[in-house]
Image (tube, rainbow, N blue to C red; front, side, top):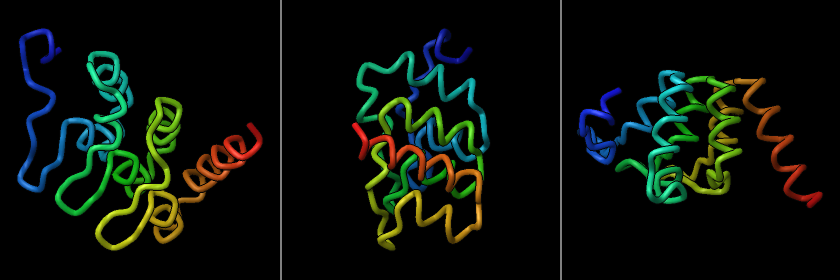
Length: 115
């Protein structure tokens, strides 16, 4: 992969998007796993926001990629973060009517409350 060739996963796009944002938006679960596995600060990577305050979890929720949402949550993404419009990943999923993503997040929240 590109990481093996020395690519910098911290490079950002025009709106501050990271490689993790792009992978989450496009449903590339294997890339998400690779980026997280090779990160020296997983929490920072997971919760890094673009210029509009959107995290990788928000990108995955918006694009309706439930497997990516699940992986990001399992890895420690903060479900409570808000973007500049005060939307969370969950509210984005609701607005986009992404039912499977909503259910994954609801289960995650319930599990958090139960532990």
